[in-house]
Amino acid sequence: MTDIRKVLAANIKAFRKEKGLTQAKLAEHAGTATHYIAMIEGCKNFPSPDMIERIAAVFGKDTLDLLSLTPVRHEWRESILSDIGILIDQRLTEIKNIENITKAQGKTDT
Image (cartoon, rainbow, N blue to C red; front, side):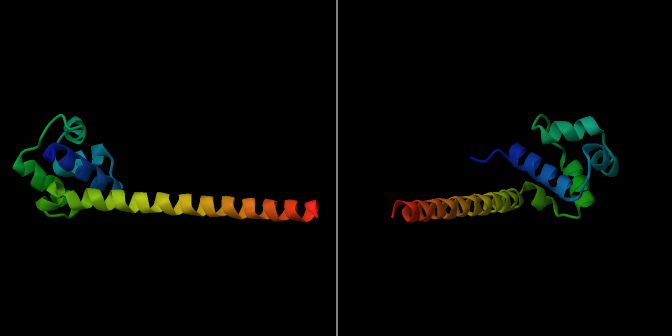
């Protein structure tokens, strides 16, 4: 079962960072306190439907976007794919280095 508080918190945080907003700026635009935004993002408080609408409006999103698993998964997917690409590049470099060392040792052995 999905914990809707965690989904909402992760989406708000992801959209806030995407917009380059601090918790204080989000709170200001949504007409609430910074502490309240921190509590929502920390899964300590669940906002009213009215507050969800106001937060969504700040991001230019539909309220369903804040409650959807898709934005969170998309962000994770992009991050994971980037990390995988970096790891593959590192491993290919290591393999090439090993091949070069092996070739060089083969030349000195003859």
